Image (cartoon, rainbow, N blue to C red; front, side, top):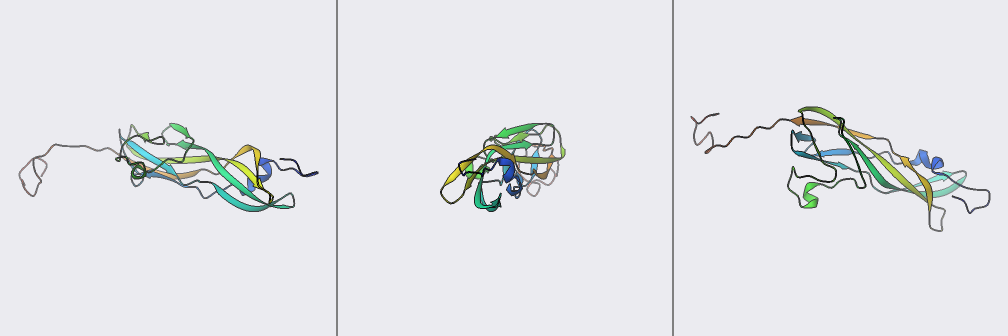
Length: 166
């Protein structure tokens, strides 16, 4: 950014201010079922941070422009958005979303999301975009993936105590 004689700021000058409080969460409850979509969400959002850069007080606005989800099993996905909870989308659990993933094997996986931010600064007279982007530190969460088995039954074990499986 230039325009002020003898003063300019680059995205590198803003790196120490990049937001670091993002989290990642898996639905439902950080548990997934083999063969069914697990939904993932990041808490990263636009943040405004005051600071001093090159001796000048300013306000920095960091806006997420990419969410790089790593599902911990060798699969990754970039998303323009942080993901949305199933209920907020009006979707049933275990339905695909733009940030969901289907695991093929049971186990424990560390899911992470790295957020890329665009930056704007305000010196007091409006927002000025800064060329380039910055990566925030990745957030991670352990996900437990389980195998589920279903069975058709005629009544409950209380109603039919001698039925198979009771």
